[in-house]
Image 1 (cartoon, rainbow, N blue to C red):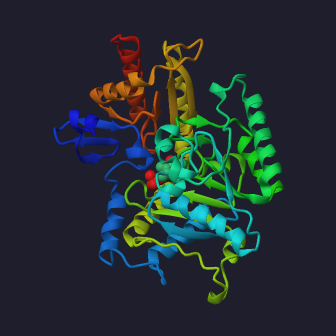
Image 2: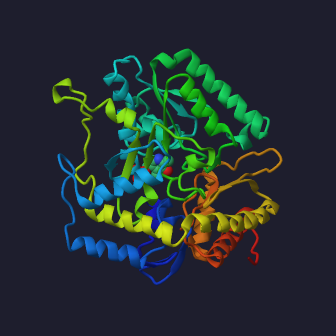
Image 3: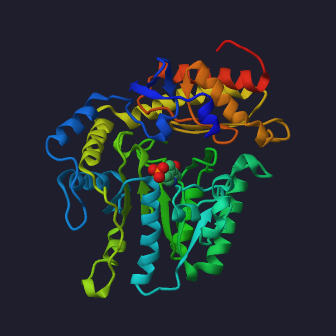
Length: 432
Ligand SMILES: *Cc1c(COP(=O)(O)O)cnc(C)c1O
């Protein structure tokens, strides 16, 4: 809070990819207001969808009944997500979607009589939200360590962080991590309910990209050892990685998938956990069998949120968002190439519109800056001064612009990033 108080930033309005504060300064929304925004701010179609829904009803409960936009949205989600995810459970944040996934996976095994399957496999550096169940599944020390006494145990396996692996070689790092996962599953699968992973890219721990073949490899191991695969697509879903869902990159169909963030185009808090008909059926029984999934939130299935989510999905089609992200992410890739020449840029990781630049003190040894120096934070302050907002992840500078950003917007944002990195880490003032 001390940092906030020093120089408070109060946003008053937004338009397209720009945010405006109460003092009249404008900034590029370089992180999509925490990885949410898709089509820019004040998108006409989205604004209108909410106004139209307001003329019908703002909210009624989803407990014991349903509503029109929630039903329509569920149908659309089933159609657009990987084939086999046929059932939808709503909530109102990514963390809740993860809580639901974990309780569902746990209770699935209870309901079918394999009651000893109670544990989870989690990834080093994983992040799944800030509620206690989601924190238990996460492994980012700086966020999670203090709560350790409150958390349940899991089997933690190494996530393939190629840059920080002693070999530095993708396939070696990948195969080693898969072998370790296999060892854990072989030994403990009888007591393991599910494995949770952020597909293709770990977000909050610093944009750590998986080597090719890792996700598919995980899926086959989960199948082999009868362990459910939970794909947390809260950050990666809805086009962020250049595919509708990150699982599509490797044709993976998880048993449970969590979504949130971009689902409403960044407008309202809706999240959804999807699962297979097979898992759904394990809960579907006479009330007295007590197989009910006892979980619900007051605002679940909110009509305004579902209405804007539907309009968001229409825009994905009409504005050809996925195709455009694929084309424009090449531009990001090419521009990021030029960052390699900077003295303190250690690693550049990108998939689609999700990129991270890892700053290091020494490029040769990969030695990090002292955490107390807050180099990433200093860079983000410089970027703010230059007219762009993002949040650093330690010393990783994240770029996650709205998917509708134009090539010119992207070039301007990347220009600001480069200048800020160079100014802060090299102490020099440069042009562009
Ligand atoms: C942001 C995020 C969450 C949590 O979502 P909230 O809506 O902030 O609760 C969960 N998982 C991943 C991968 C995320 O990036």
